[in-house]
Amino acid sequence: MEVCRARWFAVAVAVAAMSIAADAWGQGSVPLPSTRVFVVGPLSLYPQIALRDTGTDSNVYHDSTAPRSDLTYSLTPKLNAVVPIGNTRFVGTGLGELVYYRTYEDQRTLTTQLDGRYEVMSPGFRPFVSGGFISRGDREGFEIDARVPHTQTLVSVGADVDVTPLTAITAWASRSSTSFDESQQYLSVLLAEQLNHSTDAAAAGARFRLTPLTTLLIATEFQRDRFELVPLRDVDSVRVAPAIAIETGGPLSGDAKAGYRIFKPRDPMLHGYRGFTGSARLHYIPLSVTRVDVEANRDVSFSFDPNQPYYLESGGRFTVTQRVLGPFAVIGIAERRELRNQRVGEESFDGRREVTTSIGGGIVFQLPTQMKFALTYERTERTSSEPVGRNYEKTRVLGSISYGLEL
Figure 1: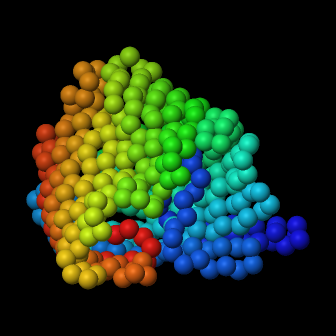
Figure 2: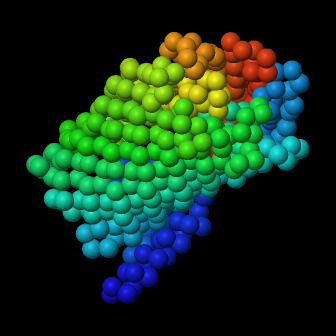
Figure 3: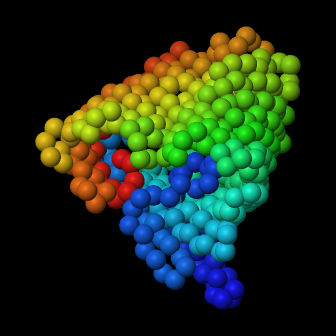
């Protein structure tokens, strides 16, 4: 029996390794999709797939003076593989994105992610260990417009210790690294020199089960970012950010965290940040025919610019879906992101300021089998305080089809 289980454990790892992906890492137990489960012995497989953004992009390069249009699509498969082993389980995840452009071959990219988590499921003492690898080919946030390949790795260990049936003490530690190839440039800046770094983090707190669907986490996290080639960028930070996770089953689901961060550069030439940070991915269904999706964040990130080494990003994306007849629905989309850079030797966030806004809408056809079809129009515009080459606008008319993944 033990040999059989070990064999299926290896199969799960291999299945995860053959899949491609893009989910964010987290310290909580991996949420499994509600798609159809394929069971092979002790192995449970949860497949998902989406053909997204099939249509026209009017400004492929985010060019301010000579926009170029092209036909595009992206294919996003995802697979969760779960193997129970006594009172423990292994969850392997593979997910990714293939982006295709018909004319401009340098815009074709492949992003792949593999990660796995081994965890104890029984009450009492529940340790876990997880690890992951991402090879990214997509655009990095709202600042870098080029599709520049880079890799990220993460390992973490931790444990929950039950104090009562509804309360647990939790702690974890992690190490991650980001690496660009030495030859990769953006606006004549060597990205490896400015952005290659490692991050060490440790956190502890308490987890409370407020309702059968709702969990509250209150934790303090200490983080250290180190840049081998540019020590000017080294930062120590402390974050106190209560987080809430709501499972599906009620009108509100998703997760959110909000709190206070002390972001302290080690070099006195850089002004730090003390203030509110947070993130949210929430789904609200006030009525059976209406759905509101919110994705928002506010935090400090590292910039490619050697003279403005980090920025404060804040903003969010709102989508409202209103069913109008049977499986047909209309959707409205609004998004706004603001980036404020910190200059070396200057006051807090008085550098480059950029605002990216999007507005659009479309129609959706939803089947009860978790299949979804969508056709959308979206217009995006960026304005910058440094307008040379940074301002742009674009429109996209896109169709998507998915099974189990959000469009």
